[in-house]
Image (tube, rainbow, N blue to C red; front, side, top):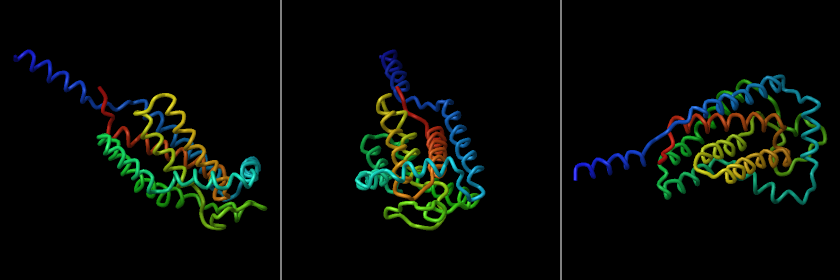
Length: 215
């Protein structure tokens, strides 16, 4: 009986093992590099010619895309991680739920206390001649895209629990949020790249902190 009990305890310990893949440090470093690189280019407040060309190509897409693009960009609002956290609680993924709940306040801190304080660049309505603005503010600070931080942060947090195909879908949707924000005229491309980098870094670091429960 003691042997059986010991084996059962060992099996339970294996099922409850919490791991923290060190590869996530490389993801976080890559995200930081993307954000820093974008910040250095955008720091002067201007828009390089190549970035302007990318903006015009996306912003000039047909008007019939407005409704689907507007719907997609909602996946980057602050309430979305909370919705996913509720789903994680229902699925008894406690560590994932904790990380998802921590994402919004950390996003706000990184976006407003760090990046917007360091890089003051206006929205396309101020620095993109002829920009098509589709129900977005014409002025204000736009670097980085907060919607994209949330979208890539969620994708990064969900990634360890998804199949390979589902991971591709998750990150494709996160990238589409960035395309949508550019199409609507809310952000320039580097705003989106910086947001993606910050989201990846936050998601990777939060996953390292809370750990992943695996068999």
